Image (cartoon, rainbow, N blue to C red; front, side, top):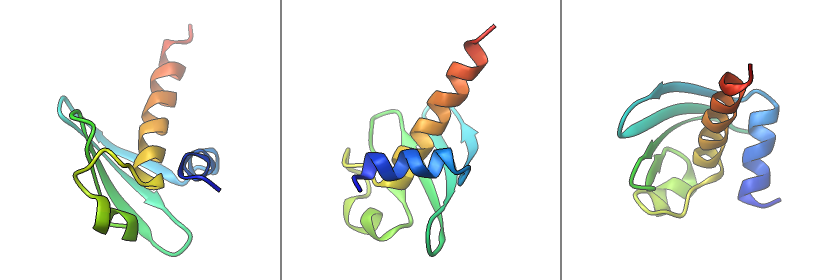
Length: 84
């Protein structure tokens, strides 16, 4: 399963909680298979996550599945809000 597919699964299963959406950063928590992860997405396109992938790729544009899931959850919430 790709990171994008895993992210979509996490969103679909309701395992993503968006904590904060700000001007420069979005924060979320994601319940993974073995732990709960804290994730921050920066408007620059970089991210931070407490997962193993994040330990090696934090502050890059190579998002982990948890960061992608938070991004998808925010996008879904925005699109739901736009529907009359």
